[in-house]
Image 1 (cartoon, rainbow, N blue to C red):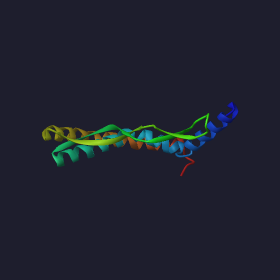
Image 2: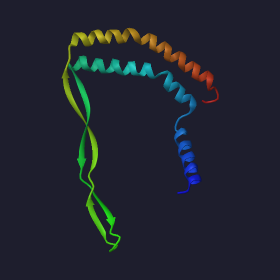
Image 3: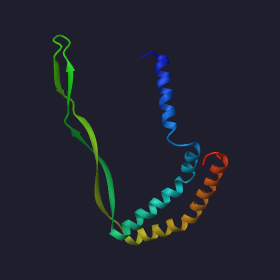
Image 4: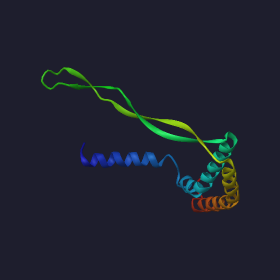
Length: 135
């Protein structure tokens, strides 16, 4: 592939990726990220308290056997050869928790919620003011 063709292809790919979300949406997502993270932490803590234990999630690699093919340059024959690939699965393990500490943590999260909500709302208003033409 020639150099100018690569640049053109890269430009089209970038244009396609950026078309997935508007500047306003990107701005709002950034402005509300901390608030959404806090909400997720609250939900997770409530689930932990209700279950009585936490769930530790870990991505574990495993090998997937696969067969690839190449062409022998001398005989033009197709030759299979093993080419294992690595895939990942999520393993969930129960972890004991101190329910009293989890309740204290939840209380702290709930106290922070109004502050983070106000910041997210202010950030969203600023994004709408900055990008008014999008509906």
